[in-house]
Image 1 (cartoon, rainbow, N blue to C red):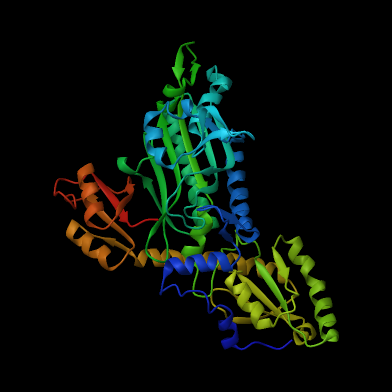
Image 2 (tube, rainbow, N blue to C red):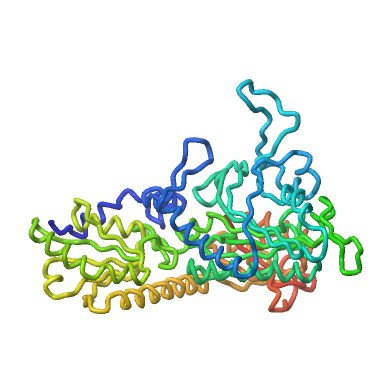
Length: 489
């Protein structure tokens, strides 16, 4: 098989928009050409292809293990919600009203339904209605539920993975006997989400409470994780909400406490979605395509055989067959690319897909009992003996995961700023993105003014660990919070 020149390899991906030219186009090009997802033909709704779904599966397995270890159980709740239930919690429906899709007719005759049914935008209302059947006593608490499902929100501006009308997620809903227990639950889950973001996706995040204006409809407070994408915009990567007794009051979710007195439950809800797949594209990708963190990569190691004729193929195939069982036994997700394509085209193909490690294997490599290893970040070529190869690759994958996180952490550090006035904030976001930390009075008017004057900049997190100093960046009153600002997806 003829080797491909660097120019020919680059030609393979020349129709991908450069990140620096148009980040939005680059993102869509990469997602579609790397065979992660595509538009379905129904406006705003996507089809997730196997490569993208495999990344989501690896995320779901990791998180599902975490919540099951702490006593949570998976349920399946209905897709359709009666209008009567949805409107019981006023703040909730007010927040979701514009995004709700309704079923009003059914059957071959398209008969009008007696009551419209909402296609779930989230499931608090139907779960609240149903869960009260299973809670009578304090002995039934805590009730720790989760479900894996899709939801529909009628978004007007869609983007693959980030904002589609139907998306896939997990939504946890828990019910507790005390406020503190529910607050602790919301913080526990945020810690799990942080592990998914940082340990699995290699994306460093800021965490903290949302401002009141950014709080989930009906919640007492919302905890959030915010990551920085390579275009300088923030992405909300997971949220965990404490509801107090708001939903319990609306849906009469109560229990008999230890004194045999009726009391309302305290509840939480929390979710991560397929937007995390979009996050890893935007946090790590480059002009050649994806760079996938090994812990969620569908294929961690790709093996490219190189040969000229049938005898050469047989020799290389026998050699590869001698050590790939070690990779399988070690749990390394790998693939041998026997497609009838030039090696260089295969290199570009797997670079586009972001596979962390590539092993090039020719007849000379077989004679020397070695392979040529190339990692997706550095593209450096290193000869590696096949003796003990599984452990070597495992070490390389661990190092790759760390390098990817460190690179993203350094990028965030270089794009995080401390400012003190609204004029500085406005000037900053006219020229660049990133996170900006400022002191804030806590007044909603200041938040709205900053959003209007700085071109849609919003408060992403409240810093509960570091006390603010100085005056509010908008009004000059004493600051009550130190907050991060950013433009966000």
